[in-house]
Length: 188
Ligand SMILES: Cc1cc2nc3c(=O)[nH]c(=O)nc-3n(C[C@H](O)[C@H](O)[C@H](O)COP(=O)(O)O)c2cc1C
Image (tube, rainbow, N blue to C red):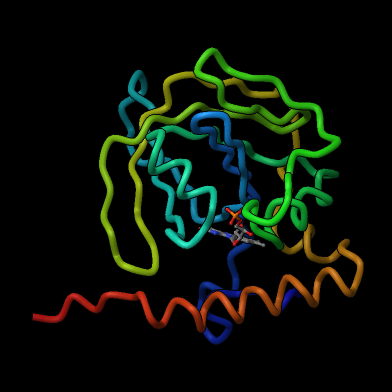
């Protein structure tokens, strides 16, 4: 099992999240990041809405905050190479889409091909917890690839080359230490 668990000594170490990539676009700039803290946020069938917990330190977040929109992609088994591409570095330092096939929604957002599904999301509200921002976003367009098997975190880590896996684990640790400076405690 990978070392990249938020709380290794707790029941959350038993989870095995699907891997998502969020892409964003604002005034000619594109970027994307890996995210796992994503979930449905309403039961109302004709008003789909999701919750996403994002770091405001990420470049992707900068574009999302400016545009109010993003595309959520659920990665498919076999797309494990997208984990380091979108989750190990910042788009401030490189073009994460280089050499990839993407198409654009009418709103200009980049959509990655070959995923289990994608959803265009428009932010409706947020909670700023300092280290993370909890977004609620309405799904305004979406597509599902029937019969697709999602890529899950443990499988995605298990097939990475060792140096990549170690680099991902180290980034996770460093990001956690970085976030100490930002987390809000909300005590009275
Ligand atoms: C398995 C995995 C899960 C992640 N989950 C999240 C997440 O839920 N929210 C988040 O903000 N960042 C998450 N990240 C971290 C970002 O993907 C990572 O910091 C990325 O490099 C940010 O890139 P950017 O600066 O180009 O936006 C995750 C990374 C990995 C490897």
